[in-house]
Length: 141
Image 1 (cartoon, rainbow, N blue to C red):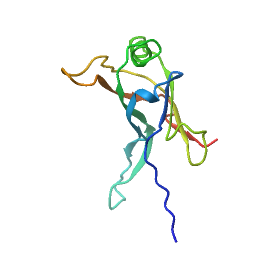
Image 2 (cartoon, rainbow, N blue to C red):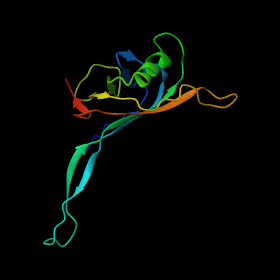
Image 3 (spheres, rainbow, N blue to C red):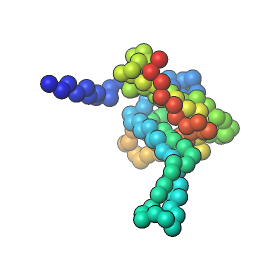
């Protein structure tokens, strides 16, 4: 018998620049990407490629909050001051383990919409955080 482990996302842990914003985030995507460098030469019968530089990123949907130590007070200075910052994402808030890895990186925030919505809507914003240098690393301890 094969046992397949599955997870329903209910308790993701997301820390941006030292502030836990998990209770404001409704969607998270971790994108692991590398440039596709073509190396095809005349001797081949088809295209050849190698992996180039990492181009990882995080994408988040966030419920807006203007209170101290909340969403806007964390994100606005990062974008406005062009500050690099640490980000950590885990599937759950439990301790880091082989079944709850953490994905960490140094990120930058180039675009931020502090207010976006129409009458009667929940105030939400979406951000994309590209990573710097080494990209996203995965740890289980």
